[in-house]
Amino acid sequence: MRSGEAMEQGLRDCCRSIRIGKILIQSDEETQRAKVYYAKFPPDIYRRKVLLMYPILSTGNTVIEAVKVLIEHGVQPSVIILLSLFSTPHGAKSIIQEFPDITILTTEVHPVAPTHFGQKYFGTD
Image (cartoon, rainbow, N blue to C red):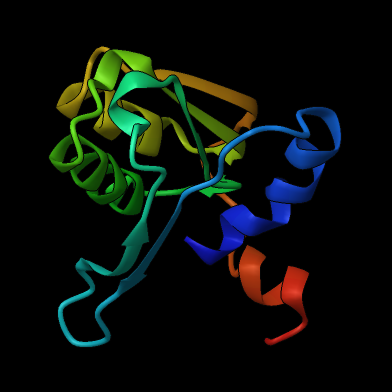
């Protein structure tokens, strides 16, 4: 989830020894379904609390796919904390319906989420 990298430096600045894992998930152009392209985690991720950083939570589909990948690596949903800057009610509800034990922290809930955060942040739009 490339857009999550926009939040990474702030986390590293305050938590210097934190272990970082990465997941790259993008929507398939034809089906619009979330597809995992890359996932790499610390080997002991299943024993840790996990901060899942995703700045703009719109539908929730990408986060749901990311949580499934974390579960495949032994992570329990109850130790996952989703950090988001903007969330839609629909996206948050979709995640909670699928994984009720996840904690979601967001700065704002609004019916319309900003789009293309990653492209704008990285200057690739």
